[in-house]
Image (cartoon, rainbow over all chains, first blue to last red; front, side, top):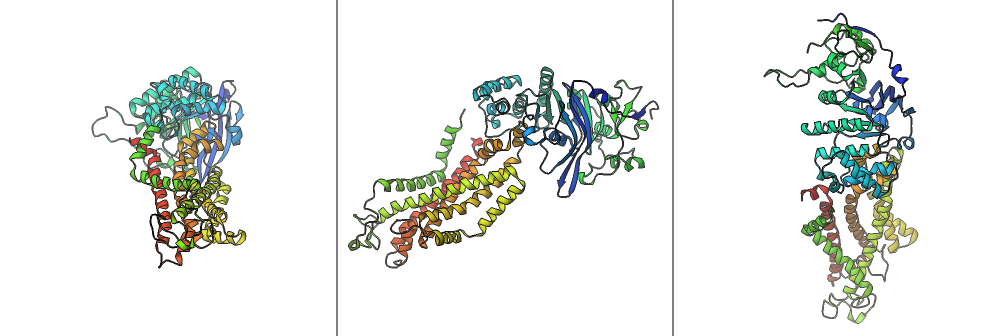
Length: 356
Length: 281
């Protein structure tokens, strides 16, 4: 049933947030173009978001939608030949266009990253202690002994069991969860302002996932750093972040406070993502819902809405031009989030409440 | 905890490595021994006692000028080792540096280094040696330099290929995300991860260098008389091949055993330095 009270109005941008002193990261119209064998691919097509100090933000979407590219752009680690435009302001400093010499002091120091696969993200030939100590030796010019002592403190903080003995262990002697704790300790070494976690629990088994997520949440709370968590897992997002960005085809299709996004599912793609998750207690024989079609090729993105080809609600106007980001205002919604909840869809009003 | 005791234990259990290392040790020992002692002075000509068969006085006999074969072989090992060490040293120093630079900088630097390697490769090693000989005259030093030049592109290519694969690994991305620069990543992450490959390649190139020196000396382009070398011994044995075949057999055997030893040791090292195999224990 269509919800008559849902109305849309033009999204003003979050200038009101931008005025506050606590703004840490402000990304505006970020575009990344990669040169591929099949021609130029637009990996990011105008991504804008902002992050306050201590805030937790989730970035969700399926493979190839630009999540990891966004993370790499923040650290200035885009692949060779990538062209970047737009603006990334980090603590007032513009990062787009910075050279290696200017970028290196930020990496691992003020912006740190945790990687998906903790085995490959650690050098197999260096001991755990040496690797955790590395950022300290790079950025704080600590002596070997001082860095080692600090590494032990960090490993204790991420609750690596028997941290003192494990300082001289090699990565292959640790389990996946333990390695990810080491990766977290490395990221935390210089007390960064922003932690970028790119699918930090995807490679771990489910029981360990929860432990690592709780640990990340605890560390974020204690240290007051901001978190950008990248995942394709809705469950991970629900327990970890206060605000959520839904990405599709190199753009943000929906953004808002996590409870608002979860309760309203404004964009058809978000709705599809929720419909496609497996559920306990579903009737036997129920087929898992899928989103028909597949992610569009980045080299051949449609002119209009990237999701139009796969969307049951798409009309001609959707295919003509990229839809603007509009605020989702739902008087009947249990969560009142004002203008912070927005989606890039022309048909928000007609879509109504999710039927799930 | 250190992996060193485990490594030594595994080394002793690797049969072909032990055999190869023993042969290489024999080669090194011969060269060292020749500095202190040889049965006879290696260059002493003794025409009345020429072409003696193996016996009590001359264990492996004498050559056409009455020189003691054992003494010649011991002293000749020096030339082989000198060529191997210096030529491989030249190749590693310049080749590895160029390869690491190419992998770290990519773009036109990589392109230039690799095309330079192709260019050097386009000249056969022997032709390079003949060219250098024509300019600087024949001698041990000229042949060492010629073989060394030939080794540079070999190491440059291997280093660049291996380094590129390390640069693509996630832990390098993680190191960059830690704020490390290209130089630091090259020496702390890339080089240690390709070192085992380079060590193995070094033993193979060492063997090739010994063969190349023998070939050059055999052609008269390498070591000049009266300096003994295995290649020269083969060269001198050629004219008497039917009257005294043993003169060709002894240096031939010395070359073959040295090359075999180095190759076995190289293969063994490749197994021993492979961390995946180390992990199984």
